[in-house]
Length: 380
Image (cartoon, rainbow, N blue to C red; front, side, top):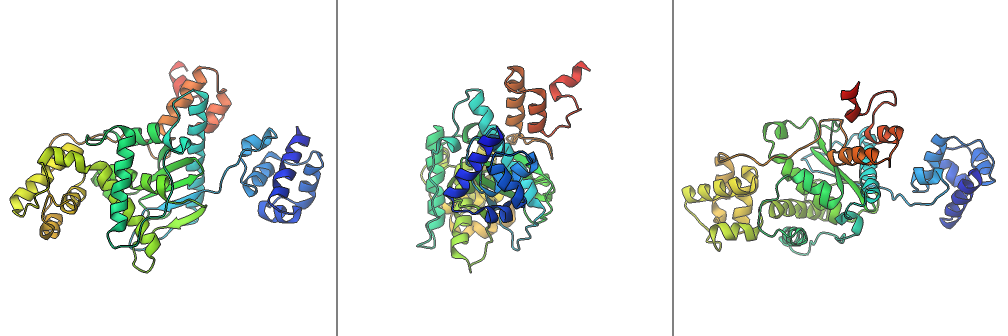
């Protein structure tokens, strides 16, 4: 096996015009160890092989078996704030999140689940349109309508946003404590694998759970459509960086249209009439919120942008607020630090069918090797 691993490393390294010295610098693995590895001699540790895999953008588990499976460098998209404070300590959090996305994709395949949109390459990554002031928002609306057509749901509420994103798009959803205090949500993607991380310390989401739907829809736009050549993409809402501003504007419009579709609003209210009476405008916002389960600000802005309500009332509406009518839609998030809910379900199923060993299941779920599996605890 060591000969096979060494052959794979040499083949990939040479194809990338990477010298052994360069690989040693990139991986942190000593040059003599790498030389011995490529000569088929023992001495490399599994940790060092993981580092070599990372340096060559290879899947670590596949390399252990002498196989070459690319693992692209991830792209990270952060939900904007007036000032961005990304803390490097969160890189490990996002790495772990992406690993959950990888495990979710692999288990879906092993369990013969339908191929998700991300793994199938259903949607094409593209730069946000920025040739006109309104172009990014119009782009976001078009993309959301494209996604809804693919879902076969042009007008109805989406239900549990987390469950939909994991099951249909193949994106793992996690809640983690972030060192970056101003980051409320982040998306990370590498190739056809992706994850969305919500901050466990988000006080606004804690007081208004409906924001979870907005954050998830917003990050879904980034991971589906933003070009992801690898690296950190901090999207800050400032006018000095038009390209990044356009990507953020597109994601905001995408989230609004995905959650409050124009076709659904037209079925409710008829063609837009630019209502200009405050009481009538508030009534429209209240009805839209009750139907589609969104925060007040999202509903008010979407109804103004689509001219159901006159634009002159936008600022007044934002300050006024409305009371949510009816039962808010549920967004079932995992506990902070817990694995993706769909991934946990797939691990239990795969373990029950003998596809995963106890040890493999515990590694994926982040459980100590001596601890019982969650579904076995009741038998102790």
